[in-house]
Length: 174
Image (cartoon, rainbow, N blue to C red):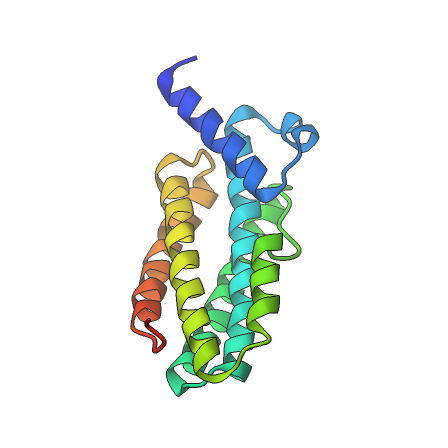
């Protein structure tokens, strides 16, 4: 196994663990497609989390900036999720139907906050989430095997980077 193949296999394994793609599901996929399938699951779950958190921000945010950013999260991540779902469906790749459990739990906890306390928690979560998803999309953009998914990741990266910049400017810094 070449060094490059080992890296792809390691990446695919990590994404499978992170996204809940089972060994049985992975066995049905060609080796190159495992990483792409794991990307679809991880990216779609992350997008659903951002939509959920964005909706919370529009209701619980203390500042107009947080509420506006929440709406941006809902709009942009819904559009990206719809595009990803279309690509994935055409390739018979499963998409997540809900956020990852850790993100769902974070949303539940944040749903109990409002005002400045919500703003602070939301800002921190948005920064952390976007840093993670930028890494995910960068890897797919540079190492993905499926041309359509690679193009989607490449096209979506500037928006995700802009979201991170916006999140860093939100009120609620400690």
